[in-house]
Length: 265
Image (cartoon, rainbow, N blue to C red; front, side):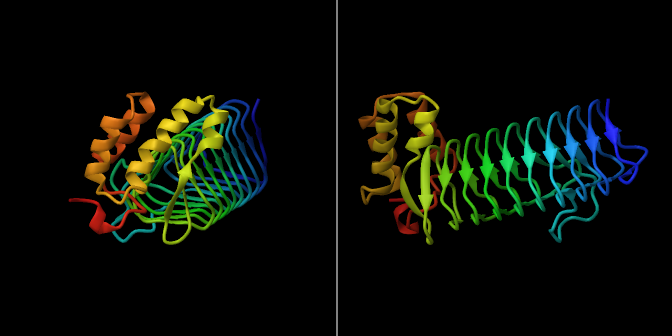
C-alpha cells in the first residue's frame, strides 16, 4: 500500500507504483512514472519525463528530470531513466536529454551523494558511487562499479571506464580506461584500483597484469599506439587485458593524463 502525503503535489496523470512513499511538500509532475517501493522525501521534485524504477530513495531537495542546461534544447520531449535500488541524496540535479526521446540514464544500485549534478544525455552505470558535489557534464559515460570522489568534475563527452577510481577534486578532461585510479590537476595516472578490485575477488595475478598494461600506457614514455602493441605482446590474454585494449582502441586512443604529442607516432 502506498503512502502519499496530502501535503505533496501529485499530478493526476502521474503513474505511481505499489508501496511508494511520497512525503509532504514533494512535487510530482505530469508524465512521470515511479516504480514500486520508491521513497520520495520532502521537497524533492520529480519533473516531466522522469522514469523511476523500483526501491529507489530520493532525498530532500533533489530535482529529477530538470530541463537541460543547454541552448540546443528547444522543448523536445525527453527523459531521465533511473533503474532500481539507487539512493539519490539531497539537492542532486539530474537533467533530461536534449533530443526528442533522448534520455539521461542512471543504472541500478548506485549511490549519488548530495549536490551532485548530472548533465543531459549522460549515462551512469551500475554500482557507482558519486561523491558530494560531483559535476558531470552532458554526454558523459561513467562505467559500472566506478567511484568518483567528492568534487570531481567531468567534462562533456568523456568516458570513464568500469572499475575506475577518480580521487577528490580531480578534473577529468579525457577518457579514463577501466580499472585505473586517477588523481591531481592536471589529471595524472595514480595506479590500479587494486583495493576495490580485491573486494571484487580479482586475483593478485589479474591485478598485476592490469598494472603491467598501464605501465606500458602511462609510464613507458612511448606512444599509445606502441603501448598497445607492447600490451598485446607482453601481457597474456584475459577479460581484463582485452577490456583495456578495446577501450583504448574504440576511443581512438584518446586518453586523459597523456600529453597530446604522445598519443600518436
